[in-house]
Length: 313
Image 1 (cartoon, rainbow, N blue to C red):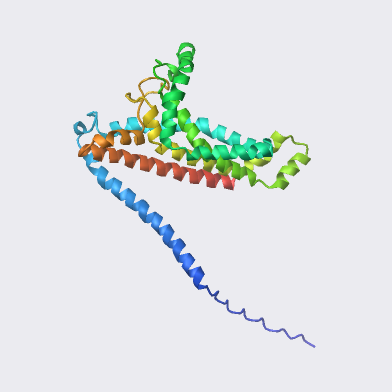
Image 2: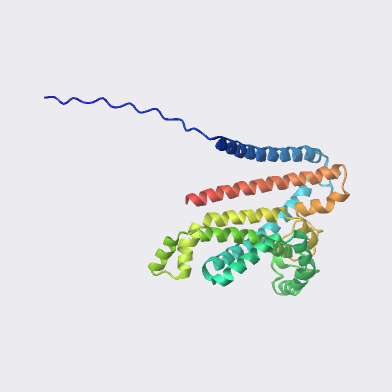
């Protein structure tokens, strides 16, 4: 007796999921919001390019300084990058340390108020930071700068001379305070999302609290810390009023952080020069704004790439 094989059943056709009207409306609004952002970004880029074109092709003698646009913009780019780098080097480790203290070391009664205070720093206007930097912070740093010049003046960073204290290092410290709430808040939320089982497993294996943080918490939140640092860097790159108020502008490219002669930043230079500018001078300022736009875009692009690589690792 031979066994009869039954023919395989044909797969039932996939039923099309029926969308509700609310889902369609929500999907359309979300798509429209995403496209609106792209349109706005393209519009800003087109405006900057159109307004900057006269300065980019103008003779060198017609640009402020008489050495051409790229020489003029190069000093501003240097000032922007060095001030932002100082802010990131100082603010990022401090922000991550505060986030770790709030999430893993501070008592609950202290952690919540401290978190509120750090978050409130983001609500302080930039001009208030600038006034604080000019009238309180800069005078307080003068003795420290004098000591650095006297004892470490052989290092180009601290060659001096010391004047009013309104130096590039002071600006970097003020910017570090300004980006601190951004880095701290995001890092704190990332550290809080570390799985409890991983932390308890590390402690159960005999790890100390610091070893648990080192091997369980920090690796888990690495990508979030990088993203928070890059957001803080973006804030520092575009800061205007605090830098314009604190920095004593009047020099070219220099690595002397405590000198009276400092390069301006792009944003501060636009804020200071725009009210009295006209004609080609306005186009020149817009062109420097275009340079800052490109720098910010590259920083964000690099941040996305670093976060993606860190997440995969």
